[in-house]
Length: 218
Image: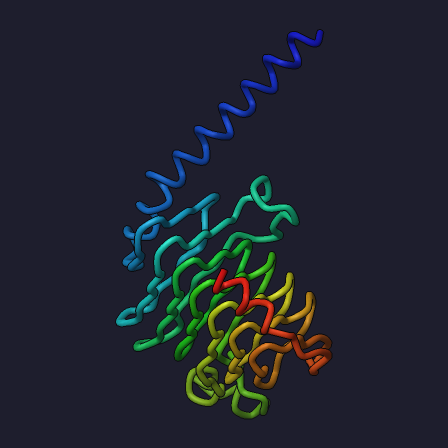
């Protein structure tokens, strides 16, 4: 029995290795390039993302970006695949290098910019639009959503960490080295090197970045 379990474990490890390699080296890059996404070296894709690009819009990914849509390969699992969606001509999603994401939604009507070394936890959602007007009279007009829904660019600066299931709304600028706690709804700018939490998210702590600077020098 022990021998059988050992062989089974080895077979599972080989299957896992082959599966990862198949997505990393072949299928993942084919999916992204096939729909017109521009990406740098080292793209890692696991599981089938959803990619929807409006005509004359653009999605750009830097180097060594990880896009995980399979619960087997992320500790918290994912409740949905990663979703990249542009909603109008000229819309842009721009992701820097060394960014990791699991089950994340990036939905842009105007522009979403994510810097280098950003970590997007499982289920994070970033949107730059209200999608619908607030006034019922505007929503009910023909073309009301496109004409009257407010939108504004979102920026997430380098080395920020957005905790699982956090939501970043239109017009928000998240500073470098900041942390958004799990489940937070961010409606206002976040200062660099701070932790915010809650709905709506508020400042709860300022981080001591001196230790980080010392580590980077060593």
